[in-house]
Image (cartoon, rainbow, N blue to C red; front, side, top):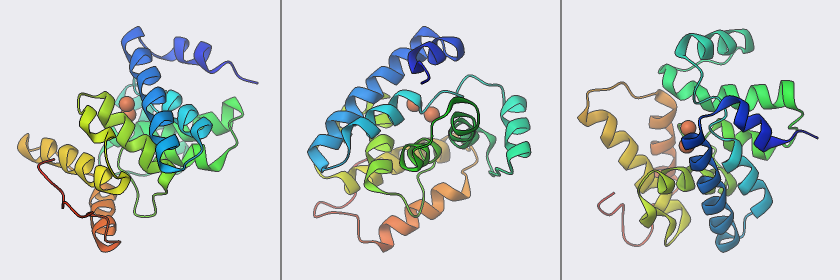
Length: 182
Ligand SMILES: [Fe+2]
Ligand SMILES: [Fe+2]
């Protein structure tokens, strides 16, 4: 059994580890409120940024070897972490792996567990209001914040994030209050 916190200490700065612990705690809380497995949410939250401090060339090298593709290299740290956790560290739970994989862009097929981790990540990044209220409208608000940030800075947007946005709208996930101010 892997000591996850020892692994995080090898790969992440203290600040990033503190972020990981916050995401784990928020994700577990969200999971309990939305009927999702809190242990899986906490584990995915803890490990989601395992590869966040790899360089772009390092991420791209692992991704190429694993057959992982993305339009924007920055989003690779989610899928690459899921791949390495499964290959090298014995993490076998496909739901936890998917939530880690999907935390950077969401996914058109995202599940409630994926949604909890996605929202918890952005809540921990300075948007605590996202952790209130209904789950799927919060995912849309979180995506709107991310996409708006990239648009304003004239940065590229990965197609998977766009597909997620469109899929959630098509699934009627706006909620009663609409997207709100995001
Ligand atoms: Fe991340
Ligand atoms: Fe994060």
